[in-house]
Structures are given as structure tokens and as C-alpha cells.
Image (cartoon, rainbow, N blue to C red; front, top):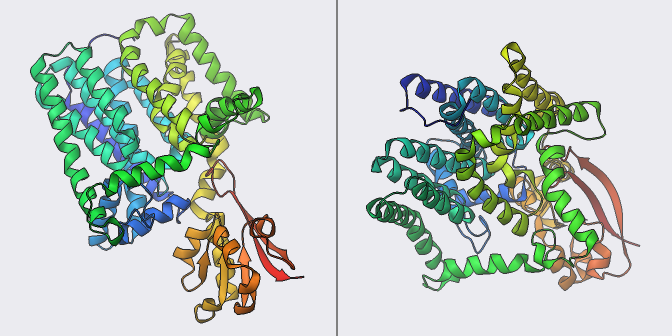
Length: 497
């Protein structure tokens, strides 16, 4: 299992890669989430109807090719949530298949099949690829670019380099935040083989042109909106505003924290061990299954280092550590501690442990199969819940829907935080507004409403309304491993004291 130069792509490997893609995609589709789990998921669904970044449908940077894919599937009769979920499931299948292909060419197909099984069953991937989120298809295009770069490494044909550049541009169109990493992969791939200036110029030109094919329509679409005033600088201004939004929020930007020892300890723990092992792998350190999974994982890592495999695979890691470290630093510094953002580096977290176990002699190497099993056992129940149990914000809105038929909802006021977008999608007819606007309206709105509800326990303190109190009605919850946001929603009624 040495890191020797790869052979040309064989037909049977192509067939096996397609089979992995098909099996994983179909499995994810069969057990997909049946609702819009995340606040962002609702914005994506609204974006399929009207692409307007001012209205956050979706929020900047817009994720244009993800929305475009949803629109295309809408033309064949799929509604927005189902269309976008299909794109995510296909992204999960493509991500798994691409990494199977990469590892099969480098380390052999036995190890590659074990890695593919581990990727497919890891909660980090399963709970991301079965929801309306951009992370799975965006991660898939990073993996596709890496796979094509590996072919270019062996064959040195410009067609593979151009294909890698196109894959990178598509990935940037799905999730524009990744454009720097996708460009870096292309640059590292060129430097890896000491490419000539023609390949450098050609690859960068293809990458630029392919990105302009989605960027120019986005610039135009936002400039023609009433808020855009015909300016082609509208989209850059939207990006700048979205960037500025995070600068005072310690949960999403490390620079906004106080940099105390306690803050740094929690921030590092949340963005590494906790998000990788407890939520990403489903191994809770206080459970027997979690301890067994951690022991197996670190046992494999110890074998990988002890047997010197890290040096045998040196060229593999030289390519992948560069982009992976840059990507991790980006997520660590500017994004919250959520498993979905770590998905692109999941294969690199799993591979050393699997390779270490696979290095055992003869039949003992099949111990490596225990790792996918240990990933599946803790999450089997969560897979069923993810498929059958709606997200807490959806259940909260449907709870209110049972109280009020659609003709009465115009008299009901909802001041919501976590469930506001879900109420707009699943509860048409209500008067819906934010907590901040409730403070501006004042408590006089009580006199003009049949009822007022909120999901914010600090509603009274935040709005400064007088002579009112909150009556707790019902709590809706779900495992945080299924999705890190909105795992607990409480509905309160605002009443006069």
C-alpha cells in the first residue's frame, strides 16, 4: 500500500465509481429529510421562487448554481424543497464516489471501499447530504476537482486540467465562499507536476471564464432589482454587508471574541474535537459505543504512524494538507462550529485510521470494517429520526396551524427568531415579524391582534413591553446530532398580566 504513481483510469474502476455514486445517492434519497430543516434551507427554497439577495432569498453570496439546479428540477415538476434535497443527495453520492476514486488509484480498492462505507455512514455526511443545504454538493465539487487533478498528475493532458478548472468553477458557483480553496487546489495541482506556463495560463483562464459564466448573471440579476438601482456593484456590496454582519459575533468570527483563556479553550474544543468526534462521528465520550469508536479510531491512527505509512504516503499528503489546512483555518476563523462546514475534510480525518487498520496482515485487516460499523451503530436511530421526524421549527409552526385556520391567521402576530423563516413557508397568512421590530412597535400591537406568539424566552426583556408576560405552551426538540441549529424550539404566548 505504497504511494506509488497511479495507473491510467481503468474501465472497471470507472464502473465501480459510478456504482458507489448511484448506491449512496439512492440511499440518501430514500432516507432524506422530509422538510426544510435549517433557517437557510427555507431561504434556499424561497430563492428557487425568486432570486433576491436583498430579501435573503437566499442570503448572500446567493449560492447561484445550487438555486439554478433547483429551478431546473422545478421545470420537470419537482417542488423547491424536494428539488434541492435531490441536489444535496446527489452531492453526497458524488462526494463519496470521488473520494473512492482518489483512494482506489492511490491505495487500492479494498481500502477505498472501506473509506466509502465510512463516509456514507458518518453522521457528518449523512445528516448534511440528506437536507436542503449547499455543503454536500459544494464538497463534492472539491472532491471532483481533486480527483481530476490526480488524473492530470499521471497523464499530463491539458483536457484533464481544464476539466479540473471547470469543476472548481462549478463548486464556486454552488458555494462562492470556497472559491479561494478551489483556486488553491488548481494552483497546487499545477505546481505538483511542475507544469509549463501554457498549462498555467490555460488552466487559470478556463477557471476565470467558467466562473464568469455564473458570476455575470448574478451581477445582472441583483442590479435590476429595485434596491439595486441598476448598479453592477450591487452584488459586491451585498457580499460586503454579509461579511460585516459577522464581525461582532464571537460564535462565527474568532476575532470578535475576548481572546481570554476560557474563550479560546471553548472555541478550539467546539471547532475540533467536539464537532469532529461527538457530532461528526456520533461518538459521545460518555457512552460505551462512543468510547469503543474512539479507541478503534485512535488505534488505527497509532498503527498508521507507528508503521511509517505517513511517510510512504508523503506525496498524497503534500497535495491534500495544503488545501485542507487553508480550508480548516477559514472555517475555524469565520464560521460557527457546525459539522456541515467540516465535510470537505472528513475523508482526511478518516483515512489515516482506516489505512492503519488496513495495514494489518492477512485477515486481520478486515478489522478496518469495524470503523464504518462503529459510525453506523450510534446513528442508526438518528437516521430514522432524520427521515421521519420533522425539524422543531416546522413542528412549532404546524402546532400553531392547528389552532388557527388560514382565514384567521391574519389576526395572529408571530414575533419569531429561529422559526421566523419556517413560519413564512409553512404558515402562510400570519403576520410575521422579527423581535427587533416588536420593540419598535410597542405593546399597543396587543390590542390589534387576536393572539401573539414568540419563540424567544427573553422577549419581554428585549422588547421592553410593559404589563405583559410569556405563557409557555409547548417545546419541540430533536437531537443536535441530526442538525446543529434549531434542535430545541419553545412556543410562548404573549399575554397581558
